[in-house]
Amino acid sequence: MNHPVRTLALVAGLALMSAKAPAAPRPAPLGVTYSGWRGGFADHATRLAKFRKLGFPLVSFVPSYSYVGLNKIDLASGPTPDELGAAVEAALRAGFLVVVKPHLNPPAFQPGFDSFGGDNYSWRAQCPWRGFFDVDPMTADYREGIILAQLRMLKGVLERVPAAAPVRLELGVELMNSPVEFPDRWERLLAAARAELKRLGLGKRVLLSHNFEHHLEIPEDFLDRMDPRRKQALGRYIAGLDALALSQYMDLTVAVPAAERGKRLPTADEVAQALVQHETDFRKRILEGMLRLDPRKIPPIHIGEFGVGRGGLKHPNLWSGDATPAQEQELARQIARGHEGLVRYLALGEGRTAGSAVLWVTGWHYDIFGWMSPKYAIPGAAAAIEAGLAAYRTDGTRP
Image 1 (cartoon, rainbow, N blue to C red):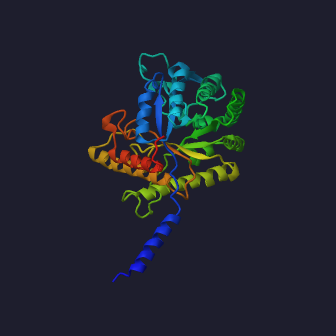
Image 2: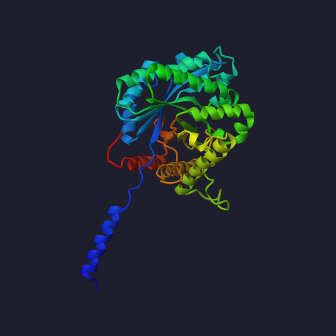
Image 3: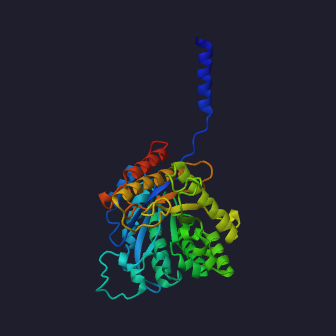
């Protein structure tokens, strides 16, 4: 028989415990990529409204420019400052956090490129990935045409939106060979950008960052190719940044017990722990160990790019290759699980130190919402992201 006094006391005690229980930490912001060549940001009102409806708090703008020859960039291939500035301004006015992430791309990726009738005979025209580019960041096309031009664009935008949150500008994005060969030149670019920030009176309204490719986490791909002098220069460059981003495409199955790996799909929690493991390894083995950075001088880290491509959870960076219908069905399961794991990772109160993450949503398997083509959509992955965005809006508001 229930005793009424004891029952009331139990209810009151549970209510008190619930009132005193600490609230769960708010997940780190999850962003979305918005990329474009010249004219690609003309529809920004429509695109931003779509992002806002889904609840994304952060937008990463990716203006694309063709790298047409040694230290030569076709600046006319990318958006004008007015075009990009209008899109960034609209995002800031809507309350989005903003990252500006300029990409150098091979001309073959540019709309309208003629592989057979064109006049570009450089290997750069058909290069499969920007990481192989040999650009010196202190040459005029890159320093003035890309980086300092972005700062001047942001100066105008931030004058028109004085209450906006700081914008993060990536000084370099996935240019693997360039920091390996020219880390001292990246130091000089950072100094030039700092001087321009001061001249423009921007202070800390623009944060200077660098988005490294995941190969920085693989010593033989990156740091083992550098002598001690260049490693020291790279360490100084990283320590001088306001933030550091990684395109995180490492193996997402590493937290599965070894005896079970390859035999089953990782759980969402195991994907989250894989991200924690890679982040911890990057800090301890790469930044502190190989680059000898003082932990106190490591800038805040962000996941600048996340997605799961044709290679599935084990090789998420692989994007090309045909697949059978059965393989596509299995891939869809893996892609959905990867995005579910990312959401779990961003909600972790312990183990995660990354301040944000951004989805790469361009191309087959990465375009989980089917924005480029309905056939690309991965409904399970989209649902996982939408659930994560709903959890981020703990106060019931949208960005």
